[in-house]
Length: 380
Image 1 (cartoon, rainbow, N blue to C red):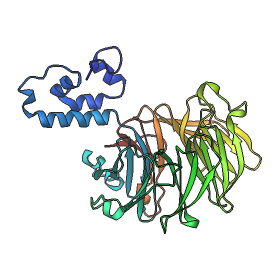
Image 2 (image 1 turned 135 degrees about the vertical axis):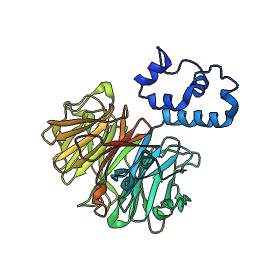
Image 3 (image 1 turned 90 degrees about the vertical axis):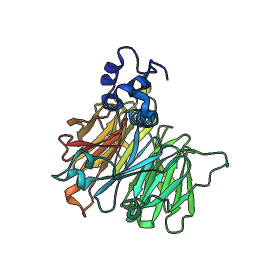
């Protein structure tokens, strides 16, 4: 491994500046020497196998990205999926306990779920569903909590060729019809019947990767956003596209230097909020009108409605809290240099575990017990 890995400056200082100080400390003197490609004294290398394992694990944590999260049906556990295909299960109830120790913030169990990254996850009343490159898998929550991490089933959408293995970037449950919608690199939305495991329809219209999905619960409609810069609204009864909003074509939203891609969206009745390359914007769906453009320069990767607020996160460490009028109510810093997913635990079965969690470009999941500050972090 080369000696230059983070840019100019002494390695210790580079580790501090890049937010990698935790891994730098974990390695120890011998591990740091190995990391930097230097000499390791024979005494230090007497347990070379365990040392190399320690270095490898520290480097994994150093370069980890957490793409997805999902809360268990009971509300007491959180699943997090990373770029190595691993899923970690954390006990929120143990970490939030008044008797919590550092060990309480580590996974109850970690297992290899996919060969590539775990891009998206959702939970049903019994199962955790995870998506990676070209496939979705199901795991029983009850078995995972007993550390029995064996997949229940896996399914692959009917792609156009057998050589096509596009990533599945988004999963969306449609409870009323007991189905799952998958979307990603093949530019299509696939609907799977969760009872039979069969794929029942394909929705075509996007011309590039699909990044995100959202459900309009009062009507059987789904929104999708993608690399082509369009948000498309689909009627699940007719399997037809009924509305298209090309966000980047609206002057107040357009930011050509960032691109046209839509990286996040959420909906609440007749309202939608979306962002990515274009500015984070609140839209009135019936009139296809942008009503509020939020004053933030950094592209946003996740957004959600919460009570009378909109929460967003993306490039940068902060979870942003917005008034619907566009006023920035608060920016709450976390521990990761960039955020990719937010999860609100609102399961009524566990009110004591009602938290917001945020994860992204690090091995940590930040836990916010109220929206005003980060209480602590869980760690792979």
